[in-house]
Image (spheres, rainbow, N blue to C red):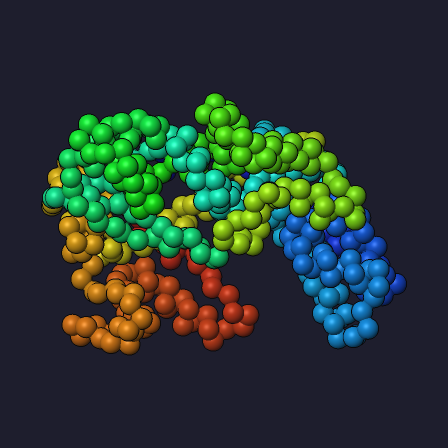
Length: 461
């Protein structure tokens, strides 16, 4: 384990509230009853905001109940139970989610543990617009204002690669729930290759059309072909979010506000004003907690009022939080304990002699040796090794469900085989023995691991 070192700092995750807060709520429920106790608990501004961010629909039901009550006692009990579950979550579960839990960093120390969190009111919100929502808005802008297409810069689809006399690339369509990706093929041509190469570093629409005109076509034909390249996603505009460029809304904002070409399009002025208004709303809402009755209004101001996304999304914003600490330090001996735990896990992690990744690596070396090859080409179902290293057909077509090919069983059945080794044998014996004992606890002693050797070079690839 010599090549593994502890980082100089560690990250912690913590619920918004403490166990003491949850116990206090439970005492109030026992004393006053669930309805008044939960009403008072969720009327606290920070907790109410956490509920609204976590579940806007539950917050609305709570607000109606708190003001008017619910006649149906069964409905009221279900509501109170849901509220109690959320209260327990923000007191006992540290999975980061909205304001329910957050993260922070601490230091290793030679002294005893010292962990003192700031009060919940000091939690720091990080608000951003949902990436799919922003992308939907960019599509809507280009559909409602087609003239914008001639003012943007365009880039080649980053998944494009050449195969024989054709290009292949990945396109996608948006649905209400997810993106559906498809592998597309388009015939090679000299003018298409010229455009693709020119757009790798980005080109304006006018530059692309001028490039096409050098192939002795009319302006109408060049413009029509340019729009076909956009519609078929061979070219993507600068409004397309890019993973490595930071926050998606900030990307779109920067291109909408700072693109001088858009100043020539008066019709887009209201849209640009919308971007500016939303950016200001995010900046003002991030450090502050709205009043109880203003949550919907405050967060609805993060929506585009002038534009309706082409495809509805469940959430238009996301909230993460960090929880600062007055002091966050752990004694360095924790690091030693972690090393021992990792050693135990290393002993108990038995590498399979035959697995898909190993076979993929072998096939890659046999075909490509030391060459650098685009991953999309390697994974291509027709020309790549993906079509060879896994011989079982995995067709997704509904009309093939339930049919067996080449003696293989249906996809719904689990056909994976376990490659047996002495480690599994030891664990099986332990399980058989402990199953007859009470309480049912699996005990692994140091003596049980003497025949195994630590191997820290046993990485997947």
